Image (cartoon, rainbow, N blue to C red; front, top):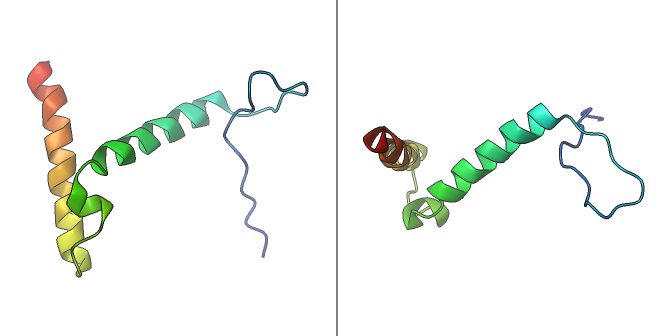
Length: 75
């Protein structure tokens, strides 16, 4: 089945034929990917120690809260 997925990543800067992409979607995608990168600093999330989905999701919530508190505390 065709899923109608469209690439949102820009081509390299030295590419001869430029690829059109949605810059707003790219910024949102980049923000989400950076958040997952920050979450994976936590070893329990990166290696998925927890067997149960609920335990893993709880660790994701804790790691997200710790990441978010850095910004709230700095403000």
